[in-house]
Length: 123
Image (cartoon, rainbow, N blue to C red):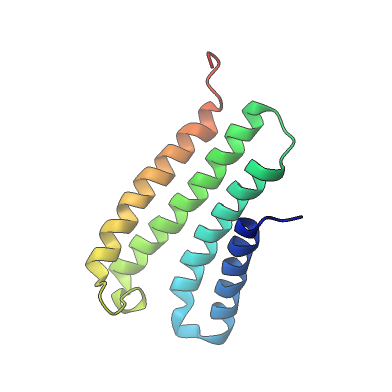
């Protein structure tokens, strides 16, 4: 039985797909959100339901984190190329750009490091 967290993440992915179909002007946010919440869903499913080795577990978490980094990088790209697509009431595109760059560095590089290295052999 899926947990509420898994159901919530899946619902957010579905909401992003729905947003993609219904509102073409919101497609950048739908792509960013779908990738970000899809990566989170992969992490949740791996943590809660995977029956794999520890090294495979860490590599899957690294891949999912890199996925989150790609979503953040896309957010930064859209903040630069189409600021209106990521601008909301109190959050200008410059704020979105800063958060997305930090997310891309944290999730992207961290995820790649974990994906490549896997579980440390001395732990």
